[in-house]
Image 1 (cartoon, rainbow, N blue to C red):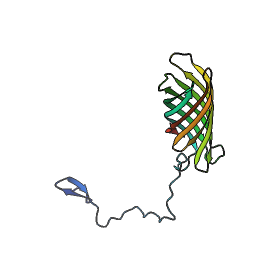
Image 2 (image 1 turned 90 degrees about the vertical axis):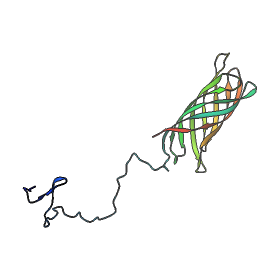
Image 3 (image 1 turned 180 degrees about the horizontal axis):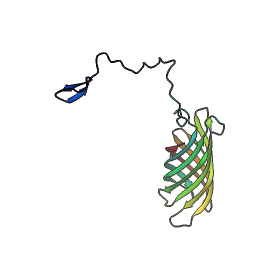
Length: 186
């Protein structure tokens, strides 16, 4: 096989391939030396995992024991909480909570909506108060409305205690644990 161009040589196995003459010089200059450490631009949307400030949506199971109508019974349900967390502020958490639970023995259940506020205690644990309305549902009675106030602490799990009154039932006490599973963080 005959090469037509002096920079191209014949290769019997693969066909024609280019080859550079021995005196060829790379026309690209060397890059200039680095003047400092390389910098990676900071993404304003990305935060340190140690920075807990932001808006959170938590959804998780809620189990408890309640005293209502002169007897204790347990509940199992779920709670959806939306909180604005500002861990360096005195009022470190503000938000709301919606939930529903079913009584295990007496039948029926309850739904609630609470306003939630919290602060950091000992610079570690978030503790706070909740207050809101509750609707007590029964299998054989009309719904009854009431109100409750509570105290809680976020320590991975969220133990709480709530007290209040429900129309027709009188005083109510509830002790429980909410497991806050993160759904969204902004």
